Image (cartoon, rainbow over the protein chains, first blue to last red):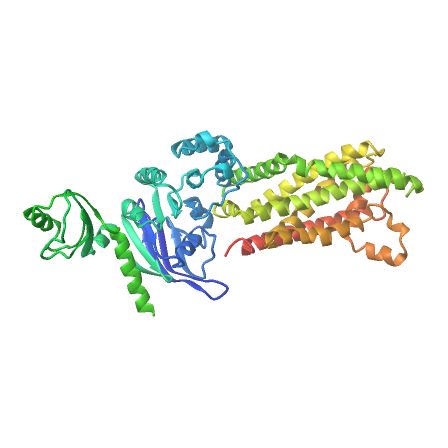
Amino acid sequence: MTLPALTLRNLCKTYANGFEALRGIDLDVAEGEFFALLGPNGAGKSTTIGIICSLVRKTGGQAHIFGHDLDTELSAAKRCIGLVPQEFNFNQFEPVAEIVMNQAGYYGLPRELARQRAEIYLKQLGLWDKRQQIARELSGGMKRRLMIARALVHEPKLLILDEPTAGVDIEIRRSMWEFLRDINARGVTIILTTHYLEEAESLCRHIAIINQGTIIENTGMQELLNRLHLETFVLNLQYPLWETPDLPGYPVRRLNDLTLEVDVAREPGINALFQQLSTQGILVSSLRNKANRLEELFLSLVEKSDDTTL
Amino acid sequence: MPFHAQLIALQTILIKETLRFLRIWIQTILPPAVTTALYFIIFGELIGAQLGPVEGLSYTQFIAPGLIMMAVITNAYSNVVSSFFSAKFQRHIEEMLVSPLPNFIIVLGFVGGGLARGLVVGLAVIITSLFFADLHWQHPLITLAVIVLTAVLFALAGLINGIYAKSFDDISVVPTFVLTPLIYLGGIFYSIQMLPPFWQDVSLLNPILYMINAFRFGILGVSDIDIRLAFAIIGLFIATLFGYSLWLLHRGTGIRS
């Protein structure tokens, strides 16, 4: 039987000023999982991560990393974790390779092994050419990738990424997604927090949503998306329409001559919509979701949670 | 963390801390050598020439150990306080905090960096001093022991300052308003025998007096105080500050929420 990568039980954190950041969180992350921890700003995500990485002291509850109790086996627990924090937290005046090699040294890796690992991860993340460069001279995207290389250099079993693609352009973000998928496929458990819900939907198989210091949802990504009853599609038309068509069962809005916006419920579904469009001679050249599906669910869950706590 | 891994971790911090001050040698190593040369020219050659011998030594000879010790103390202290505060300010102290490094390795690593800078600067200042003063090196082992232990002591003090510091002001207050007056009043430029009895007694409360005199004894063979007492005081301070800095890191003061 494999140990869960992370187990949190009744995890609490009250800061010195009395702010209750976490109100008894229970969470399990299975080994090999790609797990999204989402929530609005100030919900408790970073506090949770801070406690797991021992940067924040919990005020109650228990945390286990691959079975190692943070209270009694801190050193063993720390060895299992690699952290990519939200903000840049490396020495801006050190060369790139040195930052990665020093991190390996803190975990007790001999210098030669540290150098080899630094080479491997800097190459994989496209930073090998920059290894001699002072870190502050890197672009934002390179700095994010440097923190990923640093987090992986001791080859942790659990990688925690706190908004790893914030401020990164789309191309690099996609390449980072590929890299993270690859790392996960090699057996590394990944916990991701992000404000890009498209990112969570694309990468993660399991999702937990935290709001006001409590977990309000904890389920599989597909199960969550299946709860979505209504989606809005934007249809780009092949030929202009001069008036809004009548599509029974589908609320429709004409945005301009070549664009329609249609609300599609799970029943009757999208196939029946296309049948109606086809019958009326309306040809669609392309379509897209108006909003990210997860975003809609996320907002409704958070709003519902806010209502119940008011 | 296994012992071998701890040694590697310690070596990593030592290399990192040493490279840090060596990279900026124009800011860290050169200024103390220049300042010491100026002290020798102004106080030793110009003013000191007007004075008679102090404890049987030329004035230039007399002030040399104090000037060397002043450079060692201020550099060991400022290296650690600025490095640790900078690590907090840029948040790269978190690199160490998330790793399995035991707290005593963090303390030893930073203190080792302070010691390294203290010794490198001390060597630079000693070389400068040799251009102005005839130093005899009466007790080389005592000289070495005092310089190493004093650098360790003030590196520890700098670490504690760095742990508590919340702003750049906090890392300059202690060196400016506490350390510098204690050093200047620690008998660099005068023998406490030259003071009235009351001020002699007050001077004995200044721990730096013991370090400067022990160092002077090592080089020139003269001292205002018993050097056994000096070693006992240095040892006591080191043990106390080491224990206190470990306790602060264990509590997470200034570094963990």
